[in-house]
Image (cartoon, rainbow, N blue to C red):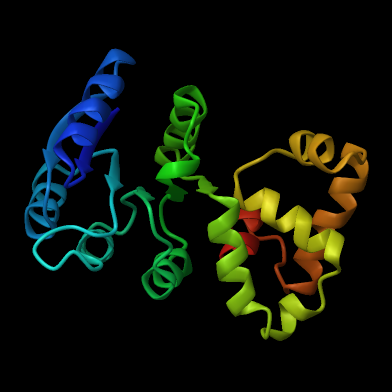
Amino acid sequence: MRIVLAEDLGLLRDGLVRLFESRGIEVVAAVDNGPQLLHELLTRRPDLAVVDVRLPPTFTDEGLRAALEARRQLPELPVMVLSQYVEQLYARELLADTRGGIGYLLKDRVSDFDEFLDAVHRVAGGGTALDPTVVAKLLGRQLRDPGLQRLTDRELEVLALMAQGRSNAAIGEALVITEKSVGKHTNSIFAKLGLTIAPDANRRVLAVLA
């Protein structure tokens, strides 16, 4: 796997490079600002972008905006956001794009590197990996949507765990219900969100993005 990494803190950036490379992941570029990130993404065309939200020169949302622009030009570019902040406006825009893998994890909640690597591989493979805090904040703003209003509390719990990339078995274990029950809740979520079976659509991903 080839990664472009964007992180303005030198110590963290160098540490991530060493950790990735120790697991056989090639970091083709490690940058510390938004314009350079966009350049490297478009030039290197990596398998995954690992991006901090707040980068120079403005230290606001440079990293996320660069990633969004790169996805406009490289539509299936997987993006893993690794940040201290939930930037809701641009996170919603990123999640609204169903092309390519999407992840959004908070730095202070990533305590297990193996678990983080699992999320990295999942996103690079076209899946999703969302921190529960990110899910909670985004759902909090989306609950006025008629489709989401029809979901029960249990279905919202299943959807939140689905957003983290968990399988039905893992969701069942977390909620202490059977895998069969998870399947029923999942099908109900699909129905209430109007997600019909289609050969070119992953309904789990579409449900999360909804």
